[in-house]
Structure formats: C-alpha cells, structure tokens
Image (cartoon, rainbow, N blue to C red; front, side, top):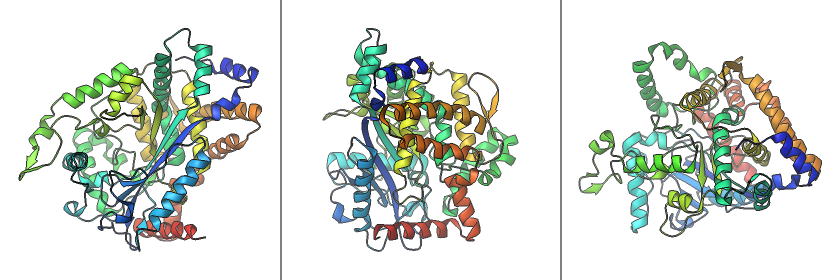
Length: 486
C-alpha cells in the first residue's frame, strides 16, 4: 500500500469524510499483579468472587495466579472503553481484600522461582490445556519474565472508512485482499515507528532486585557475543524508558525468528512452520515429568500465542478455530497493540488522551508509505526499538534511518509529528473536534522536554523521595486505590 497522504487528505476534505477517521471499535486488556501492602507478590488464590477463570470474559488471569487480567468489551468510543475499564478495575479492587493492584509493568517483589504461582484452571480439557501451556512457558523462559504486565489496546477501523478507501483506491482488487493488505501495511509501519511509542509512553525504567537474575542472565549472553557492548549495557539504567519491552524484558524470547508482516501468506507460513518444527532444546526439557505433562510439545512454539510481537493482527474466532485459522479463513478484523507499559500516574494504567493519540498514530501508520520489510531494514527496526527502550532518555540519542544514515531521536520525532498533526488537523477541520490535536500537541512537547516522560518522572520521584522501586510502587498503588473512593 503506497498511499499519497496529500491526495487522501484533499479527498477526505472534499467529500466531508474526516469524521470517518475517528470511527471504529475499541477495547482494552489490562494486566496487574496483586500484591500485599508491603509490595510483595500476593500468593493467595484468584478471588472466588470472579468465578471460573475460563468463563469470566471480564476478569481472569494471565500467566500467574496473582496476575489479574481485566478485559473490556469493544465499544464505539475510547470514552466508553475507559468507563468500562474503570468499572472492572473498581470491581477487582473491591474484591481483593487488603491486597493492592501493582501499578507498574515490571514485577513487584518476587518470591523464589519455585514459589511463583502459575495460574490454576478447572479440570476441563480447556482448563488443562491452558495450565500446561503456562507450565511450558515457565520451563522455557523462567517464571519471572512471565510476571511482567502491560496494556493491550485493541482497535479496528470503522466499516465506512474501509468502504471509502476501498471505493477510492481498491482498483477492482478483491475486497478481502485489500483489507488484509491495508492492515499488513499498517503493521509494517507500526514496527518501523514503534520506537516513538516506547519513548513517549515507556514507564518501566527500573525493576526490583528479585528480577535481577533475568537481567544478569541476559548480560551473560551479551558478554559471550559482544564483549565490547558491556560498558553500555551495564549502565543502561541511567537512561531506560522501558525495561518491559527491552531485551531484559519480554521483547521477544524468539530472537532468531524474523516475521516481517509482508503478507498474510508469509506470516501464516512462518508461524505454522514454528508450530510444527521441533526445537532440540525444548524437546530435551521433556514433555512429561513425574507422570505430569509440563509443556504442550517440544516445538519452537507450543501454540501461536507464544510468539510475542509488539502488534498482532486478529480475526474473531469461531468454535474450534485457532486465531491463525480465523485469520487465514476470513482475513484481518482488528489490530492489538501490545507495547504499552502501565503508567503508574494514571489510576487505570492509561488515559483517554493516550488512546486518542494512539488513534492518530495508527492512522499515520496506515497512510504512510509502506514497502515490504527486508532483512537489513528489520535489523535497523529492532535496533531502534532496543536503543529507545534502554537509552531513550539520553540526550542526543541517534537512531538508524531506514533509507540511510542516522538521525537524532527528537529530529526524527519532529518529522513524524508533522504527519500526526496533519491528520489531527484534518479531523479538526472536518468535525470541529480538537481533542486529537490537543493530544498530539501534548505528546510533541516530550520530544524536547524529557521531564514530561513517565519514565523520567518515575526516576525523578524516586530520587526526590529517596524511594526504592518497592516503596515507589507501593505508594502509587495506595494513591490509585484512594482515587477510587473519591
């Protein structure tokens, strides 16, 4: 998809279709660890008030028994989504007794690996499958990495927008193919420019010492393959924006697998290959231990959800289908953004303004030129991702341009924001709604004032209050709980 945004914007204004840019379906999934009043991981069972984990569509768990997952239905506006998440979040807070919801993406104080409780499920076949899958994750990657939490933002374009674009630019292409190509083009650009979201919204610059074993293991790997990198790596904490999406977090445990989202066929083929290909290391771990199954299989992926990506393309599943089956049969329905940290300064972990900005960012990714990703470009994409995650607050940080050369983060950011402002102004001109323009203007200031970044605010508050990670997280968990009762 190689759009000409200037032509598109003129078309939208001429046809009075700017309102289509803000229509769609929206939903949020929020993960939070339950903790004690001292910031220790809660070792209690998932509250019975929430019923069967496999049956409750609103409140369940992710990897751990302590890791609450709150899921909103889809709505026509982010305001409805936010209100529903607020209701669900309050329901959780009211049913966890003296425990608190940890407000940060990096885990609280963790017990020894063996004592971290994997989520328990019913004795149904589905329940057993879910528990064995989690045992496999623990076996392959360790439990501590799985304890990282975040926000997943689900989004689909309005049907009228898709119809309008197809009518104008479909060129008699099969409609489903047009929609798939549209979403894959968007996804490639999301991969290219996601570093900007990491910079603006990264909120996990620190972790508790009980997580250091994961970091030390990764540093050991770096020592073996890049000894010259050690001075930089060992001082990463000075400038970090997001440990969660860095190589020390859950960025991708499958670093040798390159999926470029160049087409549904490419994506499907690579995922199915990993699902069917035995991995010697995982196979040697065993499938059973002491008569109990400890992973689903010994393949590169136990199931497709094991492949971590900062964005996923999805289709609603029918009974008996896997997500990949649904995608292959009916094409792309919506996207899931998986790169957002919990913001401790927002009671729900994110704000309506942030979701408004994401709307504009996704439109930018849709309308920007999007050639297929090559091997060499993919390396630059990942390099930019990890540099911003670990050194995003460093003055003068340079990133790699995808055509050639390097550029300062804030200079590249200026170029991108010019496009974001164009989109927000187009909406404003046609609808009179300036909230998108305001959200873009607010985020733009962060390019030149690092103090506005949530990662920098965390750093500053911990320093000013002489707080450690646990004290900071506990204080904000209590603050957010008190906001509920106001």
